[in-house]
Amino acid sequence: MNTNDMPHESFRNFAEFYPFYLSQHQDKTCRRLHFVGTCLVIALFIYAVVTLQPAWLLLMPLAGYGFAWIGHFFFEKNQPATFQHPLWSLIGDFRMFKDIMIGKVPW
Image (cartoon, rainbow, N blue to C red):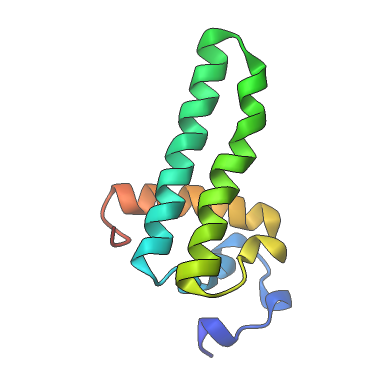
């Protein structure tokens, strides 16, 4: 079965979900926007901790989801997986970030 055609309910664990997640990020601009958004999330977290200003943490969802959703709606032209699987999608985003960093997923 093609990962694009898999029903959302069929995922029993993250290992089954991640190939579907990657199939929803085939457009390089979408992946790059995810990468930039994740970089900003990490930077905001570090800044909030280092400066002891937790208000900066409030910008993390805007940075992460904002860039990702622009990628999906304007470039990938699909619905973000986070609408169906928010936790697995969050984990998937950080996994894809790592996989891009090590060259496993194309930049």
